[in-house]
Image 1 (cartoon, rainbow over the protein chains, first blue to last red):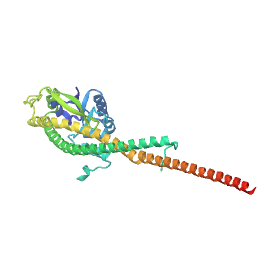
Image 2: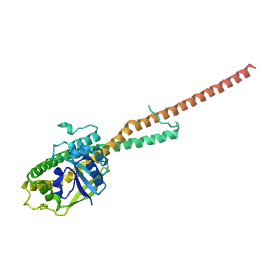
Image 3: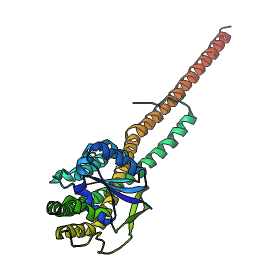
Image 4: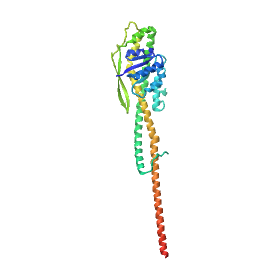
Length: 106
Length: 221
């Protein structure tokens, strides 16, 4: 049995606690990195991270890409949308196909 | 032309031919695998992209509500309203095999299923908060599906990359190398054959010449 964690600034993630997710409010990328490491090794199956932190923790997120667990997923923060989630999908397409043939259409 | 470092013998030739056959067969299989993986991957990415759009939209709306609540309420009130959640989830991860890639399948169990999962009374909070939480709990299944699909896409992309490398290595390096080596050994063997033949002819000529010489000498006497 795994748990689901959410990392981000408090205002963006407070609502998830009502769903039963464990929330980990952080202010700095450094704290976020620590939390991410702790969660990844601590029985969390899915870790949602708000976009601003995903961008700062690019290398740390990449660490978990090849493993089946945990699954690190970007979600939008309450500040402006950055499109980090879509950029990630785009990267997968580029990796698999060699060039982006899906997101370039628009 | 890249010839492998082998001695040009008949035994090597048979071995090379066998390896070439295996390589060609493997190449065809891997190519089929790559094409099928690619097809599934592209379907999955299109689906995921749509799903992500929906989920992001919903989260943004919910965040909007939270921002309004945060503006209306004192921060302590908001924090205390959400401090002790009634709901808790546990996640179950099974795995599914997609073309030889193990991908996760998520399912969750909630402690208190249903809509009534608010951890606070209505007295001290605003309706925006209730709406936002409802909105989030409505997209919970999609949030989960998004995680599952993105992980699957991630793993498939890695597998496709690996398979593509293998296909290319077979197609552009291994198979041509085997072909060249087989050609080289065949030519070398043919050359040996020819040199042997010429040698025999030469020896025969010499023997015949000798015989003629002997006959001539006998006739002269």
